[in-house]
Image (tube, rainbow over all chains, first blue to last red; front, side, top):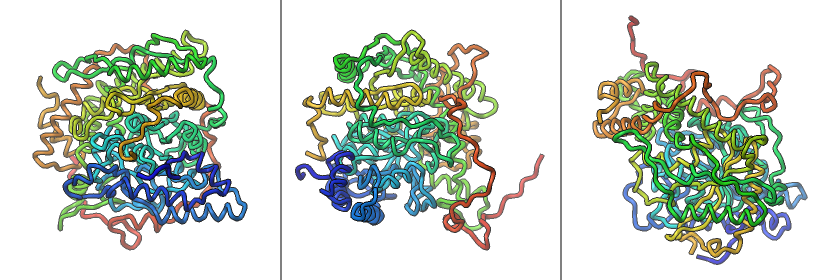
Length: 531
Length: 106
């Protein structure tokens, strides 16, 4: 692997060099494309056959590399600079897009066979805002099919993405391609989505920064919907400052999304400079133990968090305390343990509803036997087009929302969601007992697990999100930061959760933590594919 | 432990979901569905006050976060051709589908 390349710099470093005319946008793009050529291997595709040894050593973040489109964008940025025009705050910065966002005139697959022939007729608002800011969209990256998973292994597009730190490990999911592309230096920024932790969990597994904004902070227009009350687009980046710069661009009300909030967007970059003196940061015992269901009895069982992960969180708290933050211990979050059971119901009901539109009529593939009627076409198309995890979610959603079971499951889950929200309201209440600015927790119950180790067990896979999903139920923002490496040299993610629309506070704490750990030995270790 | 979803109910769900499954896939999905139901059994034991309201979207829709309704006026949208070009069968301005089976309402 070559020494430091342009593609190894942060987004803000690239913008600075570009605006000083020390590099061109085309040179930056060429560096990213070279890196993709070196580490990514063949892109995800349908019906690709057995994996080769070479496949097992590559990242496979991409489904589509949009090199021609990117070259046109980079050339336009260079033209603007040469003519003295403002090229935008993220000028020339390559970014990748989770292939769940529509980008006009690109194939937009949701990593599903059913959309394998779908060319988006318009561009999703967050992507359009990135491009308007001068960022260069270099490609669409892989994910779990329709975002349904926590390892990116359910994608119909294979080889599925592998973790750049160790390519026999999953990158997490569902924004696995996003996190892997940033970790491998293929692009400094990526846009993902988070419905139960799908930005933060892979960010933690891949050692990058991932921010799930407050629900409504970033428009969902142009996002292929999974669970409409939970989905949040957001940034994945190498640094907190890059994530702040990206959120600055994509946040804010959008006339095309009535659920996007008309709440003023603060200056996130300025916030990152403020330090943590006087901030109140909580630790909760309910985030230092893991829960799993006993499938024989249905009861919740508790397990201890891995020692490496707990150590990383407590070490972060000590560092923040040394910088002037006040650490409040023993913050009760008693309903955390219900996050996954509630999610099993709400997300499936919403997914089943959203997936009825894929039927072979208006777009996507159509499977039809000669002489077959409409019902047969629906069945044949959906059977051929959907993978098993998608079918499972539809069936679960239909069962738990059926008239005879709805009160027992769906209506109950919505009320327990209220309890989860109340936990957060209590600890962030400025007049309450705790008055927290943020809750500091682990991002994930484990480091990145082996490929094929969990896939197929839909219950165990879902519990990979147990520490992130409460934030989605509550709608609050969450930030995952690289917090160290475990004994196997795999990244550990630490998470900050805050009150509605307090992304600025989370970024402020995150930047302080970065500064406090800038010289730690683990910060110097590179992912395996870059060594 | 007995399965909560019998094979008859499972097959009815599959039909309602407009799917057809291979035997192998049906067995896998049926088993996983029952595992997921066991995982959410705990929900039933959570004490809930009768007055507790459902939470539909996490963040409250406070008035100041609600966008103003725009003026009720026609606006141009994306071009129709880019949408029509995605339709599997589009003829003479119509989306064409196979015969719709006749159903006698009871």
